[in-house]
Length: 223
Image (cartoon, rainbow, N blue to C red):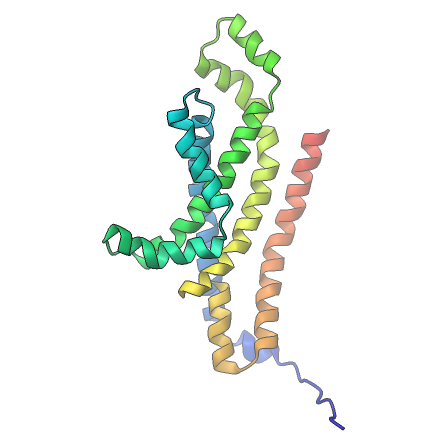
């Protein structure tokens, strides 16, 4: 008969790596903010391009969106990190190559969020604005975007939350984020239970308030 051995938790040993945890958290947050902002810029530009009545303009954007939405993010990160420098025959900084896949991935989803927000505005308002003699820029700035933004913010915040979780995939290319930091500490302490529990708790502490905020935004839009 095999007797179960009681496991003795020791978070003190894990918490002794405070500086390493702080650096890992900083890398995670930096990639999260940077890729979300980059994705937002891509989303605004590509979302507007999808509204152009020209297949020469919309088709490339459409394929970009579908390629990044229909392939695994992990594959994208690995491809941009290892394969893109070979294709371009240019040595890319590791931090840039790793973050490029994340940014373009976020941009693909942001494009759909932006496009959906724009076309969700009733067509009658487009027609009425044009009847009043508004230009395309005035129509967007004064009528469409103020209403569409309210509808776009909740899904964009939700996608940003997902993006923060997605940064944990960077560990496969040795970017020193929270997850990779955890793997280093595990190899040093042989305490995977405490280490990976700490990683999970860190993500929860960051993400739970954001999910509550996203829920409030959705409730405001529904009112």
